[in-house]
Image 1 (cartoon, helix red, strand yellow):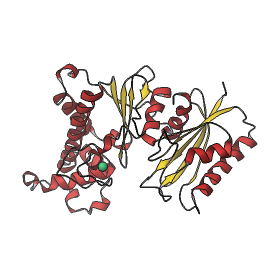
Image 2 (cartoon, rainbow, N blue to C red):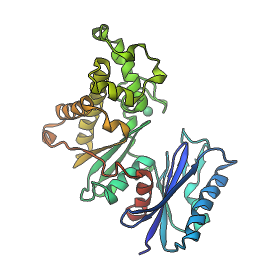
Image 3 (cartoon, protein in one colour):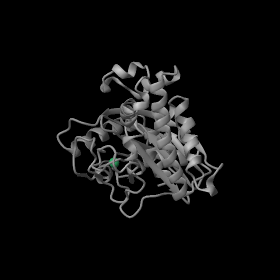
Amino acid sequence: MATYIIGIDIGGTSTKWGIVSQTGELLYKSFLETSGYKNFKSYVSAVSEQIKKYITENKITDISGIGIGAPNGNYHTGNIEYAANLDQKGILPVSKLFEEEFNLPVKLTNDANAAAIGEKVFGNAKQMQNFVLLTLGTGLGSGIFVEGKLLYGKTGMAGELGHITVNPDGRQCSCGKIGCLEEYVSAKGIVQNVNYILTLPENENLKSPLKDMKQENITPKLISELAGKNDPVAYKTLEYTGKILGIAIADIYSIFSPEAVFLAGGISKAEQPFMKNVKKYAEKYSLKIHKNNIKILKSGLENSPVGILGAAALIING
Ligand SMILES: [Zn+2]
């Protein structure tokens, strides 16, 4: 078995890549800008050139494949399909182009699926056959393992839990639908939740610096910090966000009966009222068979470059 894997994590702003061992040690990592290229082919050439330079200079020859995590990356087709936050649009044949550059097997999936595969291969889900990982960042991504395999579905795009509807009369989502989970539980969602809390008549007399702030200056980090100091608006915002996620997790248990749900990403570290309500409402809205058996755990790759490791893990368990 070859010793190393190339892991590539394509994001809207930067593309991070690394050389990863079979056991998940990161030998080297670097990054470059994702945007500003003439076309997608010239972007792939620039990434490849940087990687080739490193592996040639360091005489690394035993590489078994290239794993790629990317927004809207389709495992079945090897294409990025209509990713909203990339400057290159449409269907992008990412696997084909990297195969041509390196003459190595290439596997692609979306970034949240890659994080779930990373959890399975290198993280806290090594022994689990059924689990769900939610990435709570700018958006809400998810990867679902069923009977030891990542769930891709017919189209290769299964497991978009960020876009299940939690409020049919609710907020407009960037995907075009109304009331998606992501609009309530994500960096942008949590900021909108502050507004919602402030519009409730019962909260009219609450005192908080959030009341006089412009929405663009409010961040999840600030909300969490204020909640830690018992700011009532921040506290209620985290309670509300936790409640919505908790109910969604109860639904996840009803559908998949996982051994655990892992939470990754910045918002998963929010102050106590958040996790307290996630757990409370996941229990409250779960079926009897799942009661007292709901496990909500932290990702084991919290302090690692999870995008690179997850992408590399795709070559081991793809
Ligand atoms: Zn949506």
